[in-house]
Image (cartoon, rainbow, N blue to C red; front, side, top):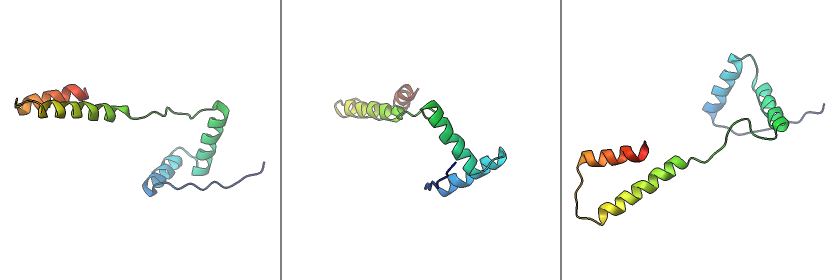
Length: 91
């Protein structure tokens, strides 16, 4: 089997943590990366779910709605009312 080099840039702390993990399970980084590549090729998908973080976007949209509502009214809200509203948005 012919081999080829694969160079990847990663965060230095992530690299160190990954190396420590690999050592703790008895393999080196090269073996772990090869296992990942083989799994992707075999399954024809990533071995984990990839999705957008829509939670932050929903919170942002709700907070913008609340800001607009507050700017269009003369009513003043108590700290407790604001905290209750925020808790309702994020929970």
